[in-house]
Length: 344
Image (cartoon, rainbow, N blue to C red):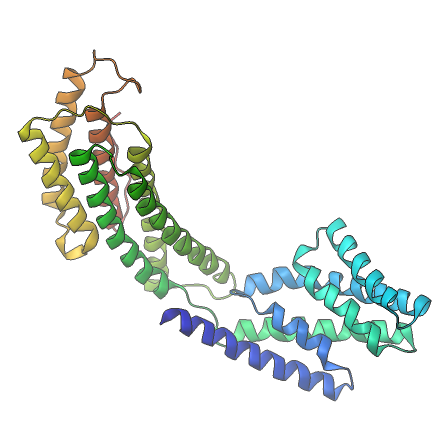
């Protein structure tokens, strides 16, 4: 649903930008098509992107217009003119690294061939005028009409990712404890799915940061966004530790029944805590962490003289990663997000 809301907002803004751009061009007796093309491609997810890419698109369009005028004057309206105008425009944009303006510049160059027959210099400046109109109108529309607001979406997505993280924690760790990674491919897929969702949230955070240059957040909204940004960092670190567990060979795990019971209970509670904030109790969370720490140090002493491919026994690796995740979950729910130390 939120996807359609965002897509709908951008469609409305694009429609408004097209109408205003075409209206201005008609008033000035300029052909609107070039300005409209520029306006369409300049509507970006954030105002900052519109301005940044607009700065690139203007000189790129000027390059395309210049080549169109040059080759029309030399070869007239011919296939060779279309080809040379497009090829030289692309090559020059690449040379000057105007990648964001490449499409607009090339379209401008080839579209001008058919409509210019005389007064080449005047036609060139008119094209610059239409390009400027499209850039300015679309940027102003993006700035003042339905400005992007990503914070609410970020918070909702983080809740979903946290819940998914809890499920992944449960499935990956239980699989390691009970099956000793017999289904590594399945665990890899779960963590990869988590990585994609986190990447999407990180992209929205980038958009919101860019947007705050022109629409600053204040009060509770700023606090909410700052907290959400820190939560994503904790989720990314949790995913990192899960990935470590999957990628590390953990064979011949030997737990006593009591140790296995402590770990299973800790994993289940961890999964529930990530799935629902209501199930997170900082006091109980700390008690489980204390149990894991005791188990960690016992295993650290008992197995330090044993030889393993990674130079660490698998039991110790698992405990280290689980304790690290416990600390990260505590930081995830802490509004101050204080960093917690992990066993070293």
